[in-house]
Length: 417
Ligand code: GLV
Ligand code: MN
Ligand code: MN
Image (cartoon, rainbow, N blue to C red; front, side, top):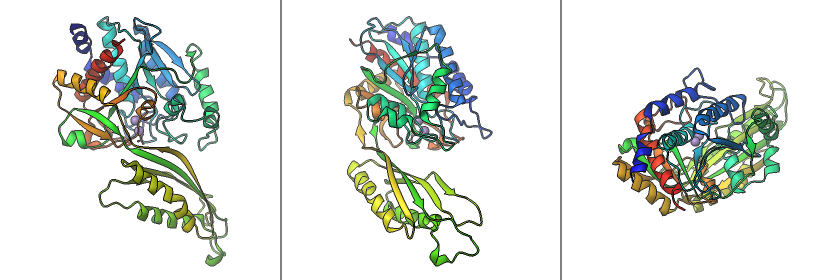
């Protein structure tokens, strides 16, 4: 297929790399990473840059009720369901330059190449930046893709607030107001196929000296928010036996949860990454603690039984305090369809790039698209498997290879009637 080769030959390593560096300037941290929170001023600037990059290619931008941003490359049949690729451009507070950004910029690079090669597929192709994948400002994450799938309810999602009390509703309105020329479209529409490129965020590809990972599926994940309520009192005068110390109760609960999820095989992943103590004053007995629970396991049954045990364990260890447990999301493990994996593998073999199949231990928007249309993922390595860290780092050549594989895969899928 000479036209397909032309497309792949037009992928530019330099342009792709320099765009990663330019995008990473928006929200750059002193430590060399990125802090670009969902629906923030920084994310508005990053979206503007994407739209600006897409403009010479004739890409038409659209946005929806949660702010998902799509850029459309028209195919021959305007009515056919598009093939979609992309990821997210929000980051963790101490995020890196590649998590999410790679999937969006690889999609853009692919469209640069298709445009240069004058490749007009049967179906339209769209790249997407999903809203709030990370879930650090507004919990839980993968908000845009979960709503697109119809797994969550729009109204209750719009009411979610960040720590400053700013709602998703206000923040989406600010984003949309900053983009008066971007047309609205409905949340959720038919898609022919979805393929997301992403950095692995783990050490396997690097350890195995492979450049491309054909992702077999995504491990299950449950997310909880726990609130422990006690009573403020004087640190010097209140008798210990009468105290309702929310932090002491939380420490008890946390050590019981750590024991529950202890796994010598290191397959159970249990993380409390957020903890807030009020009033957070040295001489006041803490009256209120909020903390997060991120629980993951590839076996959905084990994930279910561990997650189901959490409320009772919190109750058992709450001491004189009250405890409330809210489950924010519960997503089982999933396996991507063989048909999409086969297309990706075929393209990788054709390009003669070292590859392997592996599951994703991290979560991705592809999890929700899996329930919308045939879905797959392409991984590239990152140094030492380090991610959700300012030091996250990738090789320009690996990103280039990943974009080539994405271009070949999407071109094939979009050229099918
Ligand atoms: C996604 O960012 C995850 O936490 O897996
Ligand atoms: Mn990501
Ligand atoms: Mn992430």
